[in-house]
Every structure is written in C-alpha cells, then in structure tokens.
Length: 103
Image (cartoon, rainbow, N blue to C red):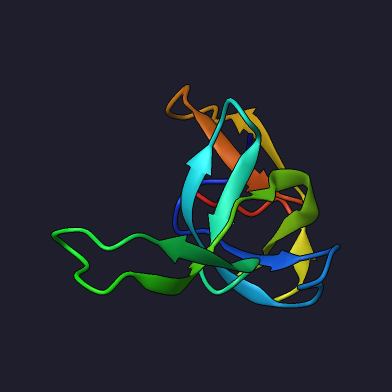
C-alpha cells in the first residue's frame, strides 16, 4: 500500500464520492484505510464504566485503499503515486505522477 497516515486523499467511488479527508489509520494486511469524516456508520454501544448511558455513536468505518487517491499538494487534484530509489541517499521514496517527492 502506498498510502500513509496523514496523507490527504479524495474518495473516488462509493457513497462519499468526491469528499476529501486525511488518513487516520491504515490496515496494510487488509488494504484498507480510515479517513476522517468519510464512510460514517452508526454503532450501538452497550453501557459500561467508560460510557454510563450507552447509545448510538457515529464512527468512521474502513474504506478500501483502491477507492481513494492522494491529492497533489500544489494542484489539489488526485494523483497517482509510485516509489523509486533516490540516487543520493539510496533510500526508497514516494513520488507523485509529476515526479515530485512526497516524503
């Protein structure tokens, strides 16, 4: 997965198509991410010590990483990401379609 926590992304498909947000959590093994304010679901919570009353809570659900695209910092448009090895430092870096380093 080429996305990391803190990346600003746009949802490309699904009920939240066109919405933008930052990635708060990634699940590499499942190829899913959680984006703040996107794919909201209602979750029923039982009463417990932390939550005396219980009730229904709105929370973000996982969304497949293939359904989001990273936004370019300059143009604020969705862009594809690939990785390449930096010749100076010999480290793997993420690069956008316009050959701009992201990390």
